[in-house]
Each structure stands twice: as C-alpha cells, then as structure tokens.
Image (cartoon, rainbow, N blue to C red):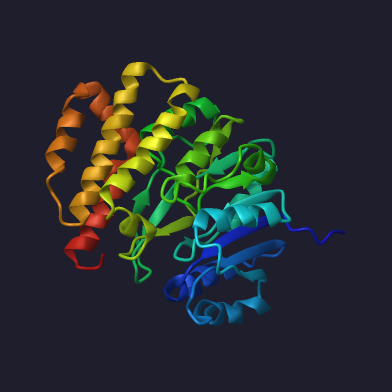
Length: 314
C-alpha cells in the first residue's frame, strides 16, 4: 500500500479570488482520491484567494505555497511539476474547470497508454458566469497518433486547451518544461516539444472547460500587439526545422499568425489588420485555406467570443 498520488494537479494562482472557488469545486466533485493539488499563489491580494480555497482543504489533498516573488504562471507551473509526487501531471488554471467524469477518463487513458508523453482531448468554452458554451474541438480523431502528425497540425495553431493535457512528468522534465520567456505561448511550445518525444493519444470524451473572460491572460496579453506577434513567431521559428512539414505548408502557419494578430487587435478595437489577415488566407489558395480553417479551428474559437462580445459579456 502506498500513499503516492497517481496524479498531480498544478494550479498557478495570481489574484484568483473571482473564479478559484468554482475551479476547485469542479475538481472536488470528481472525488479526487489519490490526487494531489499543488497550488502556487503569487497574488498580492491580502490572502483572498487562500480564503476562497480554505473550505476545500478538508476534501482534497492540497499543497498550498505562497510565492510572491514567482509571478509568471510558467515559472509556477515548472516549480509544481518539479515538486510533483505523481508520474503524471495536469494543469488547471484558476479560471478553468473539470467537467463530470474527467478523472475517470484521465485514469483510463493513463492505464491504457502509460508509455505516451501526452494525452489530450477537446474542451468546452465556459462563460464568465459558468455557462457551458460551444466546443473547442481538436483537429484529430480519437486514438493513438504519431507525434509528428500532431506537431504538424499544432504548428498551424495551438488547439489544445490548458486543462486538457495529461502529461508524463518525466517527459515534461526531459523536454525542458515551460519556456518561462514565453508568457503567452509557453503551452504551445511545450506541446510541440512533447509531440517530438513519443506518440500522442487523443481522448474521445470532452471533460474540461476553458473559461472566456475579459481579464484572462489571452485577452490582456493581446493588447500589446508587437509582443503578442513576437510570442507567436518565436514558437513558429523554433519548431519549423523539427517537424515533418513541407515548406509550402509553412505559409499556413504564417497565415494563422496574421489572423490571430488581426483578431486580437480587433478585440481591442483596432480593425486595421483584418484586411492583411484576409489577404494572407487568400494567398494560400482554396486547398490550403480549407486546411487552415480545419487545423486552426478558427470557427470554434471565434463564435463563442463573438457571441459573448455582442452580449457585452467579454
């Protein structure tokens, strides 16, 4: 008999009072026996996030650390993985959710494919008020895939929501973990590195929720246009030479960056880049444009944000 956990959940927190209770409640509802939750709080909030979390200590194995000098979520996540006691880890941000059945699906994936570096699944968008929105689907069918195949599609667009991946801890450490200089695209970079290590499993059930709200890192970070573009381009240039992709297909990834930057600018009231984005897609031609739409999941990503914006909820 051992007390070692079978799963470590890494939760980086910074001024997380607004959503943290809902996040922890979604995890507690899964009755997480044998699961450890490592929470790293850098928020200068007078202990507000800790007070929100306090009721959950009686029902969950929580290790809480105040880390006021460790602001980046990437650094807190790397620290959590380094200190984790389980062979597999997942990330759960302070505003995301587990949906019913998540832990049973995760445990089954680990048991069935213990050798893979990572398993992933599609996710659901969640509104600020907790309403489940439409699906954020992966451009992959369920089952076992070559890591190179996953990497080819991921280079066009990161279509994996943060709470979705289940990652072998030793694989995380072997690939160097999060690049802490990438405050926006570190997860994308990590998934590309992991896909080079082994096959990747795509789980069938959608059991995580990715929350959309105005104070998220995605929304806040996109307001610095040049830095936002730089984050995307750094990952693309870093991985171009390491994947099995034809040179002409790299144009799809570059068009995707143009679209992401244009949409980020439009979300902040600047619509001047939309023409550039449309031109970048048109230059691809019909076949590659269709491939871009499929691999980027642009419609999945745009529609819930558009609906929330129209409703004044984003």
